[in-house]
Length: 518
Image (cartoon, rainbow, N blue to C red; front, side, top):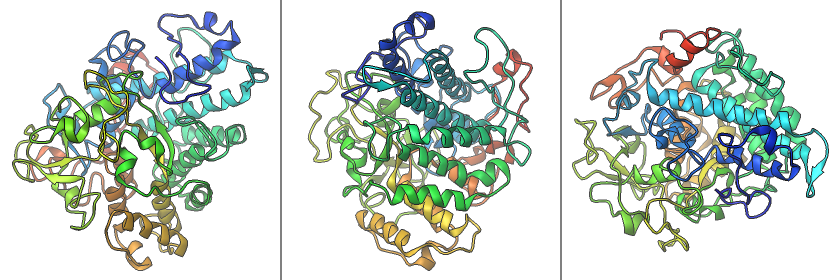
């Protein structure tokens, strides 16, 4: 498979670790860039043979083992932004927040994140620290691999805590039982993985391209600053120590950098969204060259059903009738907001309230992601079967950075600091783009306004669970439908802030310790 959208250095075939030994691959330095492409492809593909065949994660349906699909399931389905209507195995328990340590969908993403770390470690073991091939510096490739590893470790930390298996390129090759980074969970005495990720990012920053200078989909200093911003913004959750000033510093670098707010909200989620001026880092998809039943194929197909026009409005051959939203998200929007009530979110065929989790036509249809261009034209080179899509997924974008910066300036959810005038101006540009009203510094800094605005701007972009936890409203606070497994929602145990370490990994590795409550 060609790497998704880079037309230069990474327009190469990723190396398949299942069929080619590392020693053979790395004998030839010209293969280094191919191996790096495999690291990036781990975020978009599910295996080496198209949408199905030779899967990386083999114990369940291949599409469920794809990185973005697994991330969406764990970051969006157990929140006030989404609900899934499929009765597949233990999937309903994700929306209900009633999962246990044997949940196969939690297990799938856990292994996917660890797999990304393993790929990066093998790459770093195998290429020299100094030198170049075909004009490409090894140091830069190594920095990209370390960024990819840091990103995967961050998501493991965010979802599973400090007690995940910790392995680097310095560890031996072969069969051994890795130890965790430290004690399980989050807290002041459980910060080893957090500190490691921050140190890695700090060390590699100078070796990555400057902000806005990397090829589309490749790591840059902008992507690194965003990842540091996420770590610092959530530092109090992860380590017990707030780091708002550190967050402010790196986010100011992003906001004052070369990125600009894109003039169209809709185009940031259509098939031509590679043209967005505010995308900082993305997972890139191509209808012909990155075919998967996860990724954006899943994101678009699973959100279409009922009377929605799959071909005309979404550029696909049909919907899967899986993911929709609930009243708690819909009601956050004012009537003139294109991001919600005035455009991209509509009442389901059978009304907005849900009394049957498995009835897709109850709830709210979300038309945010589409496989057509922003002007409603069809893409130039579509999948002839209408299955796979060209739309990229924006992992980090400028609007997120602006709202993160506002929160850092405030000093967090309970802070008493003031949002700066320049940040407020950008917030109001974001809102004007959506067709809704501007706000004052007082309003933007009051109550849960910033948390609610993050939902309005960033829904379904895999931020919500983390945001709700940071604001103390994930297991407590306002209810939403089907939290706790009840129609109108209920409070749940704080243990659900973290996912369990999969029972299968605990059984296989006696060095690991389960998160509290599981």
